[in-house]
Amino acid sequence: MMELLVVSLSLALAFFALLDGWYLVRVPCAVLRARLLQPRVRDLLAEQLYAGRVLPSDLDLLLHMNNARYLREADVARAAHLTRCGVLGALRDLGAHTVLAASCARYRRSLRLFEPFEVHTRLLGWDDRAFYLEARFVSLRDGFVCALLRFRQHVLGTSPDRVVQHLCKRRLPVSLQVEPPELPEDLKHWITYNETSSQLLRAESGLSDRKDQ
Image (tube, rainbow, N blue to C red; front, side):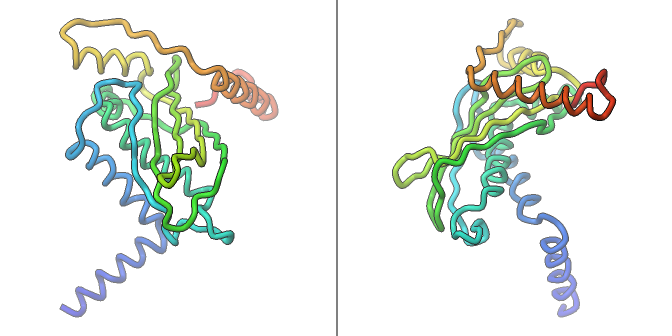
């Protein structure tokens, strides 16, 4: 019995010491919770909320939430969001998957120790290769938007249009052609920046005819 306990503790220690343990636990748990315990969201563009609180492990040397933690919390919230609105299920049905291709963050005010917050995630739209999502970190103390993050979620194995059409086909008795919403102007500028950056990097590498994933 004692040997089994020692082995279990050693494996747990190795899991958290050698791997990003909490991340590997939290994302699957968020997906399972969204799939089994939370209601489905039929509106693909609806905003969804994910609650959080700043823990001691989230702090940097200035005793506020580490900048990298915003990206991690947004990852967890985004996984739950895409599960509840059906995108992850549609990707699985189509034999496809999605990867994060680009992100940007604007930090407006620090989140302090034990401060409660919500991540407000919404789908802004899509093009022929990717979904574009936004995450707002809202302090529950006063409703202030402490950080704003944008994401380009690239689709591999199919297209965003096919994913959306698959969702509509499952939910409606007739097939409808769904047009993507108009993207915000600032997001268009960010997309243009990413495309320009990709072109420059491909030219530097001598791969001008090859597209980024």
